[in-house]
Length: 259
Image 1 (cartoon, rainbow, N blue to C red):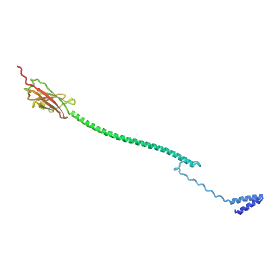
Image 2: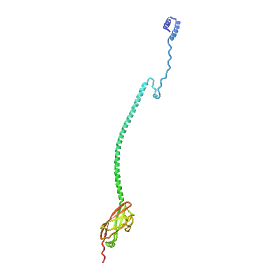
Image 3: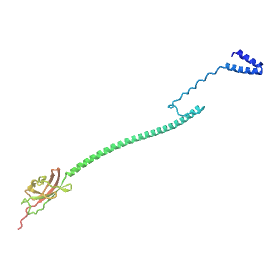
């Protein structure tokens, strides 16, 4: 309605009777309803965008307390980060301790390697000593003992006139036992005093073998009264072991015949 109509309605309401007033009130009410434009329909509510459940926590904050709840969450996260930092500091300290121990291990390793070098040098020296001992043992094993005993004879049976042979009993020992199986030419006699005094034939004719490394050799010569001295050597051709012994004996003068 126009403003003039509104004023006319108001004026009528002031001078009309009660019946008329009621009519005028209804007319006024309808006029007011007509004058007020109809409210536009409210837009349909739109659904609020939903946050992805993959990126946001599943927590729901109370109405009007969102920022306070977020603040409390941040405080909690900060406390958790402090705990993690403390553990990281502990790990760092343990790592530094381990590195220090590794340095000690490296130092010990250097010392051990030096000790091993010393031990290796000592072992080489010991090996050299063992080699020398082996040579000595081999030399001892390659040595034989020759013991000689001159068979006794009376002046009548052996003297400067009859030129009877001198029998030598020879014991040959190797490694504590008698060395058997030596042939006649394994022995060599070298006469020293007097010159061209006694000789050994080196054949079976003047040689015989007994038991347990005992042999009998005969020395012959154009005897003169006096002492004789020489050396008897024995050689084992299988092992190259050898040994020598001194040989001495007396040739008596011819006995004076009894009257």
